[in-house]
Amino acid sequence: METIAEKKPRIRLDKNYVVEENIDAVQWPQECVACGGKVDYRDTIYLKEKFKNFGEIKIDVTGIPYCQICIPKIRKGKRVNQIHFILTLVIGIPLGILFILMEKADQNINFILFGGAFLLSCFIGYGLAWLFVKLPVKTFLKKQVVEPVDAWLITEEKKDKKEGISVVISIPNKSYASKFAQLNGVLPKGG
Ligand SMILES: [Zn+2]
Image (tube, rainbow, N blue to C red; front, side, top):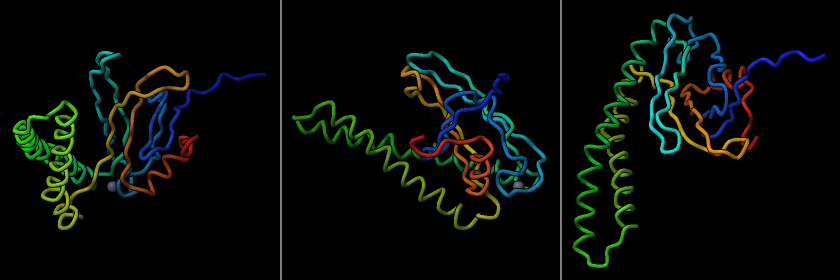
């Protein structure tokens, strides 16, 4: 006799957790993601992105549990990440333009060099912004700011060999992350 299979998420562990199927069925261990305390609040991450082959994709990652004490710390953490992102652009874009102008002075310029200059400037911008923003926060404001759970969309080849959308979830708290993996039956690396 067969019972109807319960809808389960399909998640594998890469550097982060990659949800390949059934994001709605993802379960969160019922404790604060940041400190393991009592759950007072459930956060939602709203993802929206345009993909060339799929058009606009909207996915909500719901039910991320936090306790009352961690909520303001998480909000600060999100703000710090926004500032880090903006500063990356503020440093990276002018630097990229500068590199491209420098390369233009050279007659043997080609398209690959332009791409390389752009990547390099993004990389330098990210690193400098990290030094100016994240490092001081991590060093001096450790107790007031908590790194939030983050999520973003990617396209990748699915089980059926077709390209599809997956959701990447990053859980900074290692002990919570391993409970999350257990609860959701996360596949090990290469699984
Ligand atoms: Zn907490």
